[in-house]
Image (cartoon, rainbow, N blue to C red; front, side, top):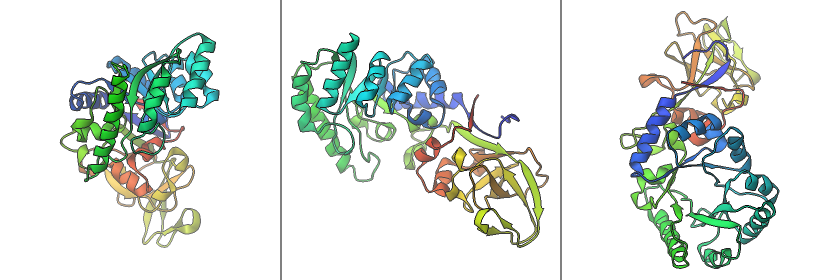
Length: 372
């Protein structure tokens, strides 16, 4: 799909997302699935992806903060939405008014939320986050016991879920994840003994439910797998996922240069012989990072061409001297493509010096999302 109206765009295959959801449901053995659409659905466009997934019968949606949750409500998404991250007191009035579910991390947070719900005359569905070893948000397992007792006094809060987050579910030695599972199971057992039945229990993210069948509980969360990516061997034959996003731009300008010509800021690259340089209207403001300078490759007419010179805010230069007939307006693939020549997410992230999640989430606001 070539779109002459855009300088830089992301082509997003809705068919690939549907395929990936089907693979996720199979791996989750038919359990309810929470689609985690943090960071603008990992760069894929949260509102558009939420609308698609709701049509596909997704059970609920997870977001990182209140702004993301309210953005989806404003876009007309009526499905259950859970803020998997933290909520600060100043955000609570809008969260309660928006019928957003909240992950509780502290007793103080629970009391503040209860008071706000009472002020608005409504109840709020909440999940309790148990920190079993991630060390970020959530109560320690021993703190959950007195909290679950005291929660009965907070009449505006309805506990509907218990959750945790694995630190490294895909590491070769499973011992740490197994300990996390043991701690979470203890919290689950305590909740049940205190009369909290029929809770949503969720611990497994994309990596965990493909790799740890003993951690499924009764709901799974998926983020990166929806978009067709998993690190390591899990991204291969077992998962059978399809990358949903291709990042593209076009040749804006062409220039023939002689040997010894410097290109870009700080003259980090000189031509070693006569060649042709193409200037692309994409830069680090679009998420194509400076670290990719003199390291990355792009596809021009199916030929891998090296990025030369320093990537700047708005422009990137590539050597197209080996591309017969290259011309202004040619489509350039920065991520994606077909067959063995495709630019993979793992490659792009490696050139950028980041993890694949970070590369996708870093796609800038100037990148136009085009859905097919």
